[in-house]
Length: 388
Ligand code: GLA
Image (cartoon, rainbow, N blue to C red; front, top):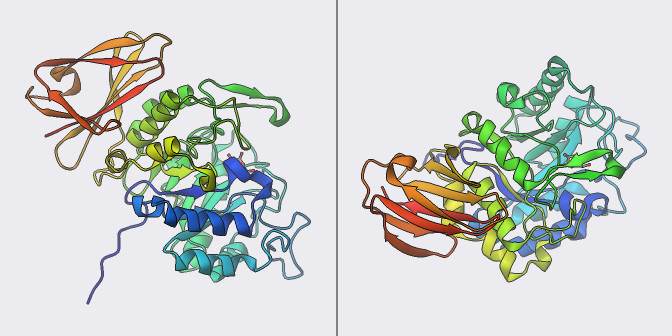
């Protein structure tokens, strides 16, 4: 019997990535325990099916005598292949990380000029996903970026194994315009998003960490470029970090985490969890595991939301869904609570009487009769689904 498998990245990829919490300390135990926890918590069954090992998995000194990358035996005593087998056995796909230069951001060997060799090695381990970073590569030269990502895209294809290719060039050279052509399925649109509402200066990295409020503007600017097979990647989720991890920026409040999740969902960003889910609390679980909210992100039309109206400090965003309904986000980016008047015509509805469901509270709230007032607290996002 013929089986039809879903094309790669037909909807935004979901999973977990080691970087935000573990950084240089990623190891086999963390990855195995995380995979176990993704299963027992129910996250896997919500759709989080990629387990991604970010930077710092190999030995720093260099390659072996054959020129191959070597997994750090202290961190991964059983090797990556055994870990991949374990993770696959639980129903996940597994991702790894490298960089389009001689060194990764963390200073480990990169894959530039070793693309085919590395791709073959990862394929032999059973790797399904590559996050390909851009530290130490020439900045602000689009042709070079396209060339370096093309080399890896080709090398991955040549293996004959299906790889999801995650382009991590931070948006400097407009990857939304070329990443699909080089085989990319998602492309970062900014530097690293921190656990912070506003950008923060990170002196040890000599750069700004991006605040979630800034990501909202980027999602708006680039909304028309995402779609099935290729997505604007707003970066890994900071939900649940609560001030811990590599990218601590003081920590978002609960309502800010909810806004962060709402925007990533509405923008069709990949949803890669960045917190330590072994320590996930109920609040974090409620944000990561709301199935009605996740269904908006995973809607098969894959149309990223767009901003349709500003009302004072609030923004109204809409996203058309496959069942002819509409997801609406009302975001308050200001520091005072607002009562926002939602009018049918503002959100492109021809008919006013509709069933409105608040997805974060899981409540049907009213018949949408011409207009509707919604209270939105500072930095809060109300997420509604309006039936078609
Ligand atoms: C860059 C990327 C991050 C992470 C680190 C690893 O900063 O943007 O997502 O992969 O490198 O060093």
